[in-house]
Length: 481
Image (cartoon, rainbow, N blue to C red):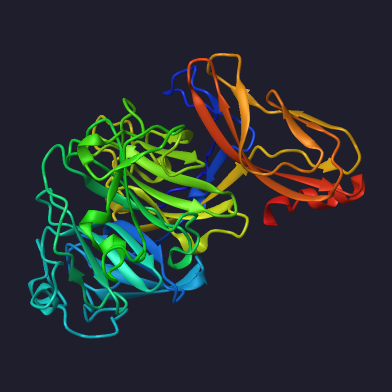
């Protein structure tokens, strides 16, 4: 029987599971997240663990696990790790092509190249696996891909053979063949376990600082109550030969400081958690350049949980603030336990409309979520953000706007961290005050600190119009500029 879906709007400024006194700078924040559950796009039944990246050739590449991708099924042409490309600018009309893993099942629609069994059964498609396993470093049963990134047209995947180790592989031919690094992140507690590489625009060109960032944790399931951050420069900085820094173990470093005093260490034992005591684990993150925001999705660290969070930050290391919480993500369709990853190419110019891919197996008995295993597939869903924006100003007209701040311990202290305020406007305490002398757009980052050392930062845009009439016309498009 067909289900009727109702889109649910969830508004969260300070989620119920956060401490009541958490300091949040509301001005410049995302105050509403709406997932369009009624109009999801589905494909690739039987495959899960989707991760996406956007290359310079304008293709998105996606990895999957435990299925046949876009040409197979849960038991048909099943592989533990496959990779496909997605062609098209419209998320409602794209062309997928399996590249690595299940290439063709002989069914409908057929794949571009023959070779896989047409009726394989679990646990894996032996014929399909044999087709590429002899010459490839990963893809056999129990190998997964937990993180993926395109730097230019070079693809990188973090491979996990399900023994706790993680290894970085690269492809320079569009995911057809892969070469592993000579080093790996070792298994066991106390070692870094990478989970999600940050997506920063097409071919990584939106990166503010040139680094590749990856969130992770320090042991496999059940995950500890902390998330950690690693980074390496995306290209070669000339310090060791001509190899890109990301490919050399000695170039990786781990966040070891605090959001207000960031520092990095080459020794993971010096790590500092991005948060603690929350249950966040893993994480798939996108940087939206037009908003100057990092958006991450996190799931509960308990294996099989359906809890999903979304957080935002002005920096890769925080402070991170929750903007969305759902104990049964996409509850009308069943629960999710396998993450929510961004589809970076399908982010609107203003950054307020984004697309995400998720998969899951339902909640199971006693979870409070629907037990629905039909979500083991490619589920593409649109999310729309609402921002708390600064009101426009007018040239030669006095402007006074107190920043909206909640939580923490008063009094607050505000400062300009980056960018510049409009000419004639200054910070008076935590208010933007003054008579602007020039028209135009200004972008700047404000930091607020409270008496208990709580901290938050937000990028903001303030447009100064020549006249009130121009201000009214410009308001609708302020974040498109």
